[in-house]
Image (cartoon, rainbow, N blue to C red; front, top):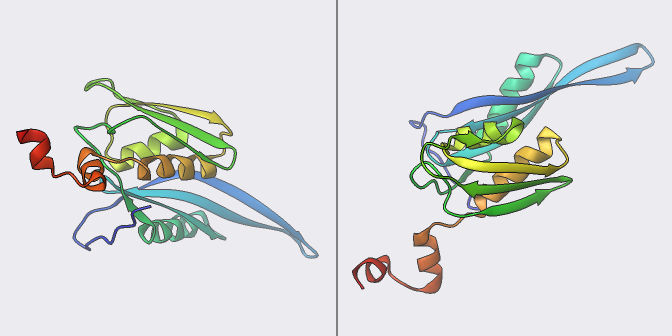
Amino acid sequence: MNKVKINSDVELKDRLVAINRVTKVTKGGRTFTFAAIVVVGDGNGVIGWGLGKAGEVTAAIQKGTEAAKKNLVKVPVLKGTIPHEQEARFGGAQVFLKPAAAGTGLVAGGAMRAVLESAGVKDVLAKSKGSSNPHNLVKATILALSQMRDAYQVAGTRGISMDRVFNG
């Protein structure tokens, strides 16, 4: 994955994906805590996810946001869509992403939609197969996006200059 260091002047928007109430049974009774999965993104190809756990919902969300800001990756977004088809799997969750024509919109559900919107993807066809666990879906979607390569990255890997590609 291509981790990215972000400037403090870039505005990251956070999105809450899921909140889970966790119960621990002790001698004194039940203790409730909350786990929040949060996705942050600048809407221009930089995204990250985080998990926050706390006794209060707001504290869990805040911790998740802070964790997400430490876990940022840069993904290629070309003209509002992704460069090519990509599949990824994390745990029991499997995702399939396919580029779409302008005006198609974001055809994705649940946790995948939150990740793709945070990344700034406007047109994509997405399918989740297997587990619908939001935690694993978020990780699988970010994994799929981080495996994407645009034309410049492919040309660099092949040792070709993009000037030669466009100018013959």
